[in-house]
Amino acid sequence: MTQSTIETQLKEILAEVLELSAVDLDDVKPSTTLEQLGADSLDGVELGQWIEDEFDIDIEAEVELHNLTFAQLVNLIIKSQP
Image 1 (tube, one colour):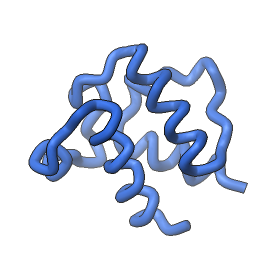
Image 2: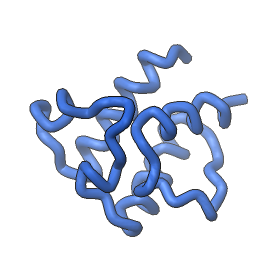
Image 3: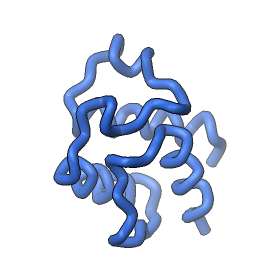
């Protein structure tokens, strides 16, 4: 799976979980934190479940997704793939 594909799928997940519009998604930069998009720790748990299901990966429980940037999350997904 390419980085571009991961980024697109991740933005779709963010839109669903965080109820973001297409305009909000256009503003997502690599340095944008999920917290800046409105994610709290509960959203982080939900995002983790969606991401694990969508990308067929396991995310360690101690990873606080809501504190990660978009780029960090993309890299986490890439590194977690078999």
